Structure formats: C-alpha cells, structure tokens
Image (tube, rainbow, N blue to C red; front, side):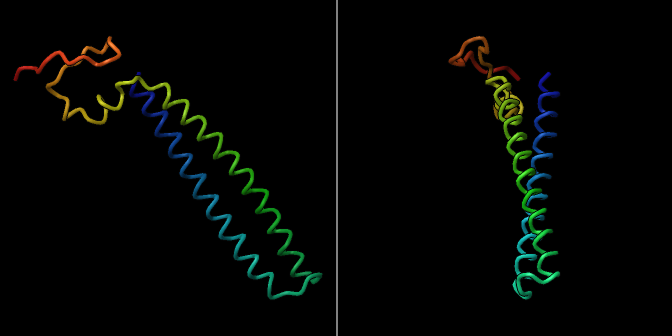
Length: 116
C-alpha cells in the first residue's frame, strides 16, 4: 500500500513540476511580447496583435496557476495520508535497520537493538 501511495505522490509531484515549467515558459513569452509591443505605437495592427496574444497568455497563466493550486492541494492530502512512520521506514531505512520500535504507540517507545 505504501508503494502505491509513494507512486501517487511522485506522479503528482511530476505533474506539479510540469505545470510550474509551463507557467514559467508562458511568463517568459508574455514578457517578451510586452517588450516587443513597446516598439509599436498603440492602435497599430502589430500592437493589437501582440496585445491579443499577451491577453491569451495571461488567461493561460491564470488557468495554469489554478491547476497548480489543485495539484498542490492533492499533494498535501496525499502527504497527510502517509503513516506517521512512513518517512523513517522509507527514507532512513539504513540508519534504523537494527533498531526496533513499538509502532502501536504514539510515542515510538524504543524496544531495543536487533541482533546480527
């Protein structure tokens, strides 16, 4: 069960990174358009074309930020679903390899060292 939870967390993290990358790319493009628009006078066809594309990028960035917030909420809920000992067992297994804890208690009472 923990492996599927770990896989879900990794998938959501990957999607979150992808959305972040898309946001950055759209923001860079939007900033370049804003610089390009400065070379045209307002009211010209070129300026209006750039302004329309700039507005479309703003809308896309807003939508991507909403997607990012949704993914972050999903990631937070998955992280809350992890057992309290998940990180110790999965992330630090080599350190705790020979130490046994009473997992039923909340205070993680130490039970002793394991034999070789």
